[in-house]
Amino acid sequence: MDMNNKSIVSEFVLLGLSKYWELQLFFFVVFSLFYVATMVGNSLIIITVMANSHLHCPMYFLLSNLSIIDMSLASFATPKMITDYLTGHKTISFNGCVTQLFFLHLFTGTEIILLMAMSFDRYIAICKPLRYASIISPRVCVALVVASWIVGIMHSMSQVTFALTLPFCGPSKVDSFFCDLPVVFQLACVDTYVLGLFMISTSGIIALSCFILLFNSYVIVLITIKHHTSGGSSKAFSTCTAHFIVVFMFFGPCIFIYMWPQNSFLIEKVLSVFYTIFTPILNPIIYTLRNQEVKTAMRRLKSKFLNSNKASPFHYT
Ligand SMILES: *[C@@H]1O[C@H](CO)[C@@H](O)[C@H](O)[C@H]1NC(C)=O
Image 1 (cartoon, protein in one colour):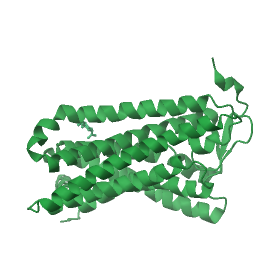
Image 2 (tube, helix red, strand yellow):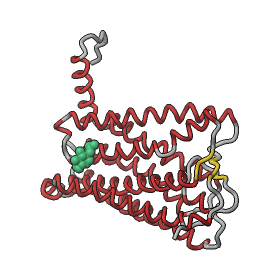
Image 3 (cartoon, protein in one colour):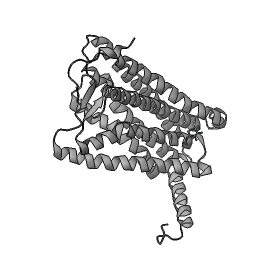
Image 4 (cartoon, helix red, strand yellow):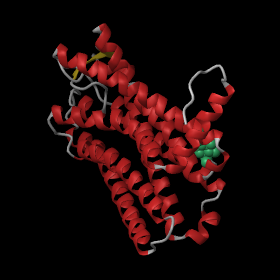
């Protein structure tokens, strides 16, 4: 049974972030820079973790896995938006739209579970340090990563399955720069309004519950650190606050968009920039600027690289 046959609309028009060309030029420049920085920064994290055997531990494996998801999240819609600014071509096929929806929910769903895995890792490391090695074994670490992808796939399948049952016959202008359920749903000519709101707000409720859980575990971790003031505590404190900033920047907009799908489009657009463009770049920024271990490893990698390229006239220290 192919519900698609009912749809008359075969492509959508993505209106983008603004209709003024000055703003479009601004977004083109800024988002291009952000995109390049996201790809370079996250690749650097992955290379650094892979190349340094003393970073071969669950926390950094999870971090580099997060970098992979960040790069994917930055790539599912932003390059199309950037090139659309150049070409003026703004349409997206129905299938393209559903594909964007799939990947958006796949990567955000996976990222949420991975962020939870990272907080679990820090929780055990700080609150149950003696049992850390036995709880977070390499096997458990792989299992956490696999589980995050499985949950991501299941969640995005449910969203896409719902989107595919919607008939589209009327307006086809998507007032955003990528397809997502809250905007696309408003274009469907159905009266399953309640079901739609339900589908959308499940994403919000899941995100909210995960956020509350994460929030609690970081509060416990931070309190534990404060009560055991010893040598490594300020390092642990800065690691956990860094994690928490990422979590907050990522979850805040997600929760807002999905819990109140009837927001104005402007607010929704601004918020969607947060988790598709800002969060993917936050990881490299936060982890390289605040983590001494990563910084040292990167410096070592750079000098190794420079030594193997003796032709280079530059010598950084
Ligand atoms: C992702 O995590 C798994 C499980 O720990 C690890 O084996 C793998 O190397 C990680 N991927 C990257 C790119 O670091």
